[in-house]
Amino acid sequence: MKLCLNEERLVKKIAAYGDNAVNGLKNAQSSLEGFIDRVVAEDAEAASKNYMSCVAVDTRTGRPYFGLSGTRTPNPTINNGVVPDGTTSDHLYEYYKNILNDDMAAARSQGKTEMEKELAALKKNIDDVKEAASDSGFGDSFCEEHAVDNCAEIWASRNAILDGAKLDDLAYRAQKTGTKGYCSPCANCVRTFAGHIIIN
Image (spheres, rainbow, N blue to C red):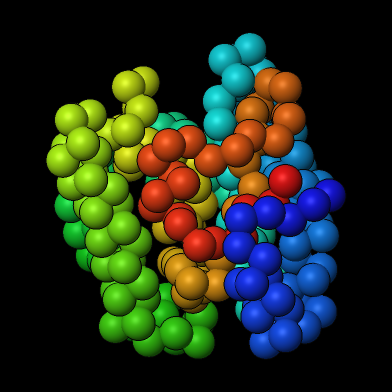
């Protein structure tokens, strides 16, 4: 396994968080493949349709958080298979902000306001990429086939934030549910997560 995209940040996170960061990054591939196996066991089409999946590793704790592209029910942040109304970053930001409560925040040693700030930071990244795509003549996405909000990295990030992670501490690895091979970030995610550690 090699680590790419921002070795400087990698050094800083390992210096700050030590073994938690090292072990989380080392285990990223195996933990993501375990998630993919669970998804395929529940949805036989997941292998043939080759969805994008992602693990976001919290370098502070070493914990992995998962996501799939699109609003599919295996996404851990979709409660009981109910997709939130709307798929824009505005709708999703409001949805997740509204499900936060003081008990959830206390259980994760993170204040509700801090979680809201992290969700807002993610939303700003998404909106900045949409604006840049529009300014460059691409509509609201640099990828013809999907919206910025669609990406597995976005869903994995939300899941991590709702468990108390900070966006700046997240490192990412993406793989397909069928081939399981490493996938580099799409044209949207390269911008949404610019400067983050990408595990390949």
